[in-house]
Amino acid sequence: MNYLITPPSTHYDGGIGITGCNFRHAADTLKEHGSSVDGVLPLCYLHRHAIELFLKSVIFILHKRYSIEFGDGFSLEKPAIKVRDKWLPMDNTHNLSDLYSYFEVIYENCKGALPETTCWDMPTDIKSKIDMVSGTDPKSTFFRYPKSGSAHQDVKKSRIQKTTFEGAFDNQEKPRALVLMLDQNDELIETYDMDADALGKIQEALNYLSDFFNGVHAAFRYELANGS
Image (cartoon, rainbow, N blue to C red):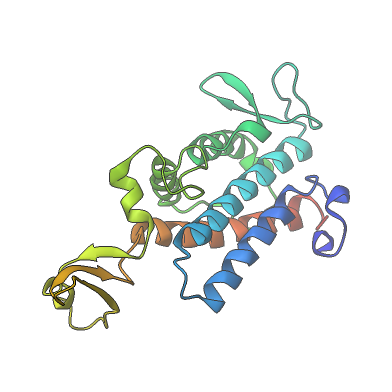
């Protein structure tokens, strides 16, 4: 795989895919080493951005390999995707559902021409996972800021969650790390769970999609771009 050992500017996709690989690797490193700091948002963002870049890379590769034309004013030098009959610059498109929907269209159109040495079938649950993540973060801002416009959603962004002292031990199989806030009379006034389930289903979807599209991207690079 030459794209792993050559400058991004020389790559078949202009460096989009390897940048996705780098974000994914950063997510794996952050997860592996862990931290006492609440790292949910950085970890989610790294995986989400990797997925976005992998999708953009395979879209670009299909356009280039099979000479698929873009809309007026767009080209391989200025790529775009089609969203609801309108062409939008790829650089300014961050919605994962829009990217995946466009990928599905050109992928199905090219499927008959893809090399038979690889199984190109897409799992049926990919779209639902993409839509779940996109519904939470449609503009690639949810995981980057503490506030995103929805107080109900924003409170889920941290592993540190308010709880009750009694309720904290409902699940006896999970050890609890609690912070107890006392008043001047040593009376308990607030309890915080330091390891609550923050965006659990979203994290699972992001991990799955990041791993899956990392493999899809590698297959496209090997089969359609000669590893470049």
